Image (cartoon, rainbow, N blue to C red; front, side, top):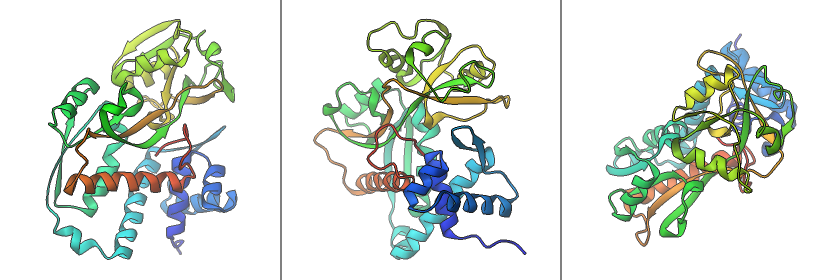
Length: 317
């Protein structure tokens, strides 16, 4: 006889996926760590699939777990819709929203949120445009787009725009499974600066890397510069260097299936911040305000499920 699946199990699973630790998920849900572990194991037995890879300092979703994570979100959103009795009203809302986003946001942050929004508002079309940061800022100033979803940590003059922070994602050191630092619980920027560095150049990641050590001279040894995140994963997995990147884009494997470790950095390293931008002096109204509120509420719920609301530098999605 198959085990019955409960909404509580879905909630505990999502909390563990977002936080990356069963202990943090237990704290967020105010239950024991064994309750989180038992819920996840029950789901894994029911699906006959591993949802998490157990790591020395936490857990990471497997490819199957990533797929299930999206389904679990949809289930909880559908329950909220049913409890609010709002489905019929939402079916009648129609229109179009013009939204711009960059490489990281488009690839690793927005797709699931837009899917959840479309589930609730199927007749609202979102015209999504891929824009580099300077192009997006210009489009906002010209009022050519309704909203931008951007890395706020890369915007020099945030007071030039209306803005709202949606989420933060800590940055950690990525190394190969065989790297000398792979089993360290944490490392310093000085240790990292001794390593050949794989420098991602998309979305101002190279500028962020230079900010990590405010005294300058970081990274000291650049082994490779690339705009491809998958190239970064592959180069790190094969041992050609290390990099500092956010948990938002972290996966514990390369395309070739080689293991990648993410290690905490003991020195202060600013987190990656994702948020909304809109033209200054033109507060979102109508459908744009509806989409804005949805993103804010969805991200607040996701962070609350993982006990991360209000914590800077915590894990993300």
